[in-house]
Picture (spheres, rainbow, N blue to C red):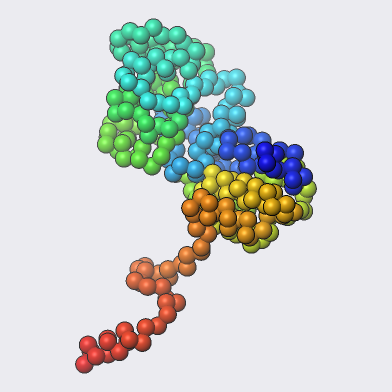
Length: 309
């Protein structure tokens, strides 16, 4: 069923796995992250790093930030989506290319000098803000990370000529920490948080309404909603994938709504679990070895009593 969403009276697919600004919902966490990114750019802080596991919303945040920056004529954006480069020269040429500067492959020293002149002309003489965005930054080689450090040396008093935003998975932190000179130049670290149940529920409703669901309608039953949200485990991408799969299951069976059995099938098909894990109580700052509500074991009590004799 290629247009499963029409079965539910929707005009668009609410859960396509793309960073579509039409469906982007800004949670308090993503709003804080975007605010910190904008502040770093405004003060020309140099390098800001956004970390998150796959599926935590890095691409959506980056897309939303780009949309905002592109509305400002004083901002010049260059974006590298696949930072796997075979050499420093290749990386430097790519940096020039994303800013519209055609740099012939020359020595790395000549390329750095050409970029420095471009950065100075743009940031100082034209009084514009240069922003280099690198996605999947955990794939940068140590050589390219060192090159970034050198590019961050280009500055005038109180202003870096180039603002660099790195979006990457958690292992990027270890790789940067291994180069202390680079770690010292990081203006801000931003770690994306997992969604709580309230935020996940709000995102699902928002996307459904943006796709054409009438306000007040409940396409997912409360039980189905809980299964999808728990199965997602706080990851936005997994949340939309499971919601999509659950709706498809319901549409294929001619159901008017998404019910618990459809959501459970969707979770099972992806090899996930929607079971709620009971919280482990903390006593005096330490968690006991077993939950407080663990069933009693009479044989253990007897054994401990015998040992104490």
